[in-house]
Image (cartoon, rainbow, N blue to C red; front, side, top):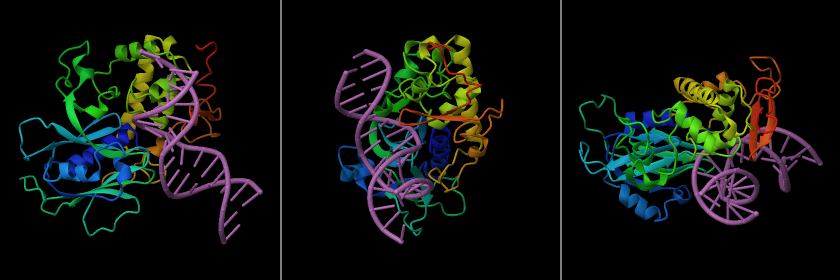
Length: 319
DNA sequence: TCGTAATCCTGCATGC
DNA sequence: TGCATGCAGGATTACG
């Protein structure tokens, strides 16, 4: 299931294979994947055709590709193709003679790249969006200045002046962005009055964290998922943020987490991080720190995995 | 205004 | 064997 590291792996692949290439035509196979683009599949295709794909960017689980008129356009793009993988979305680069996937939703037919760095072998000429459960989707959105960076207390942030799609403007920065400091995270959590895991899964608090990495980071920090966010201390917030970064960077290095072939990179290959998970999906198995059996509990219409000894249940909302 | 629960969707596993 | 049910979960929406 794609969370931040998986989306970043896909972003890198899209950048490598599709950046700088012009869209020849667009085929929408299933307009349910454009649910959030209210103007319809015809307008979607029309607005993409003849545009050049720029360098892709990401915030949390939102991935977007700025659209330009020319390959070396110096003017900032005004519109972006926004892709969200949901829990079963895939982006694949393939040739047009490859058989259509069962859940193929949108195909972008690309012109050959003609820049000097073009490799000798021909590049795949299609960018395909595939989505089994249709929780993900594509849409077009105008780009606008990033409020998260411009409103930050620290200056000289690399994000200052960055453009974000309008549809993702409400999404908080993710743990790998420099704007997310330990103090920022502490203040953000203290302002909320909810459980820690609820806060981690709320993309307006911090983005990019899904069920898997929330459980993993809480285990690394030794904190229970129901711990109240407003009672967290500075050092605990720092530990939790460190846990988030640690697990995400490790997953990124392994090419992401693959559970059921729902996540693959743009070449169709699976990641290898699953074998490194400490609690998620390990109900009944021994905790690698204290040997207590990992417990699974129902939480927010999903499952929470934790070690009852390393992550004791809070009493009176604290510990 | 904020926090929480329901909803969307499909394939797979399980039970009868 | 075939059908019904439960489960997985990210983002949005509706409700209290």
